[in-house]
Amino acid sequence: MEDFGEIVGDVESAGIEGIEADGSNAPAEFFNLNGARVNGDALIPGLYIKHQGSKTSKVLVK
Image 1 (cartoon, rainbow, N blue to C red):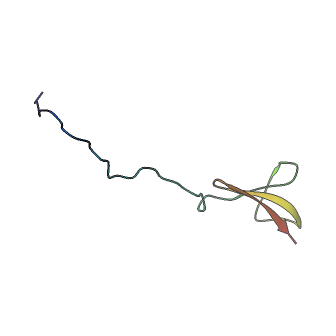
Image 2 (cartoon, rainbow, N blue to C red; image 1 turned 135 degrees about the vertical axis):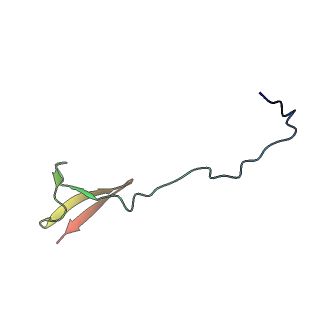
Image 3 (cartoon, helix red, strand yellow; image 1 turned 180 degrees about the horizontal axis):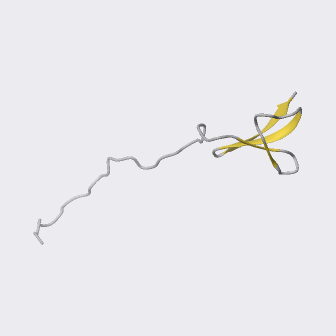
């Protein structure tokens, strides 16, 4: 192994520290109020829970 000598001083990183994804491109999943998964393409009027990526919201279908 080659000896490169002593490292003197602090080394600062200049890269990416973290990656955050909001999940907006993730497929949406819909659940009824009993917690059963339902087809999001054929929702009948009512209240549903929508989960997409890391976000969950209530959806009212009229």
